[in-house]
Amino acid sequence: AAPAETTPTSPAGTLSPPELAAVRQLCAGQRRLHQSGGLAVITDEATCSACADFLADIDRAARVFGLEAAPRGYRAKFSPNYRALFPGEARLYRVDVLETSLDRHSSIWVNGEKFELSPQAVRQA
Image (cartoon, rainbow, N blue to C red; front, side, top):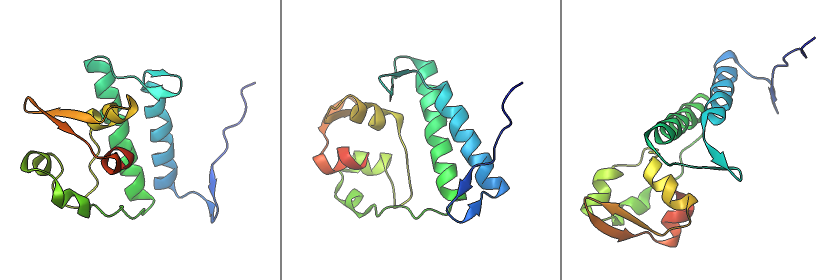
C-alpha cells in the first residue's frame, strides 16, 4: 500500500489550504525542471518555459506566505535598459538572470549589448 500523504506543517502549526496549495505547486514545478547536480539546466525553449513557470510559482508562494520582498533600491542605479527590464521595487524573477547566475557568469546581453553584473546583483539574482 502507498504511504499516506501527510500535511506539511509550519512552526505555527498546520498549513492553511492556500499555503498547502502553494507548497504542492512548488514541488510540482521543481519536478518539471531539467536539473544537473541539483541546479536547473536551461538548454531550450521547453526547459526555459519550465524554469519561468517555477519562478512564477516561487513568486506566488512568497505572496501566499506573506513574505516581505527584499529592498530593490539598487535598481535605481541600473542603466535605462536594465531599468526597463527591472522596473520599480516589486519582485521580478527572470530566467535569463537566473541562468547567468547559475552559470556563474557576471555578464548578460540586453538588446545586443553586453553588460557586466556587479557581484551584488549576481548574489541577489
